[in-house]
Image 1: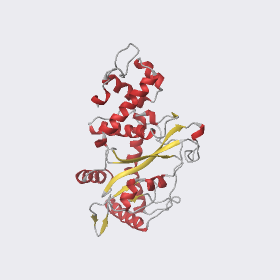
Image 2: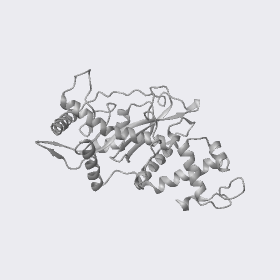
Image 3: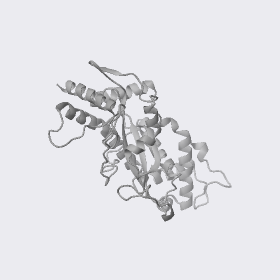
Image 4: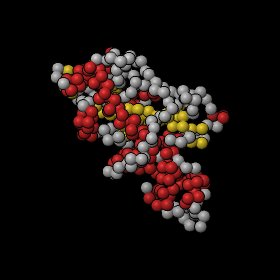
Length: 319
């Protein structure tokens, strides 16, 4: 990104001492703004620059990272998918699982002229949704953002390219896996906010104590552990890049998706570089604290049949 950020007079970025900002200082300013969520005034005061300079530097950084870091967030190739499937099976006993899906609300305050019911979610906050699919190492391998927080997670899913590709057999279309006399296709795991589909496994609905069979309870336990990866990934994302966990004052709805994408890229870069998150980075509560989980009643018969096959296999593995 160095070439993108080198300050050149006469339009170069200058600090209060009249010096051009180095690339390193620009990166530090942008990372401070994204990681802390502090105001531009506060970040500027820490680095001896004005509010407008913080804004310019941050956007130059975001635009450069969007262009040059695309390879850090993409759907895995065949060999990588095999690694992911082995990871989910080894850790959670879930065969042929390619990822975990979840979504979160990014808080925003809109000017009165832009307010609408679409952007006001069920908790009366203005927000933008981010849907993400993560692998067994909590790396984002697919994201979808830019849509209003008033949408349900199931509707958000159906607006995504991932849904269309999966429904058309262009994604999660790898080899089936034999489980005794049964066969299961590739899939991802998600919570009860999502529809049960042949490529998206959701938990069995509980209707009170002892309402589930042993195999169904075993499935829910294993499924829940795998799904928790996505929950933890969002907790780390919002905990590491706290601009996403605070209410953003009047963000440009066209620019906010770029902020979100940049934070997801930085999240992945940390993992790709073999670095590790400090234990105190993750948000102390749920990444969508204050939101009640929505329930989606949609059930595809083929999805139900596949879930039953997985439940049967998982029970046999525990006996």
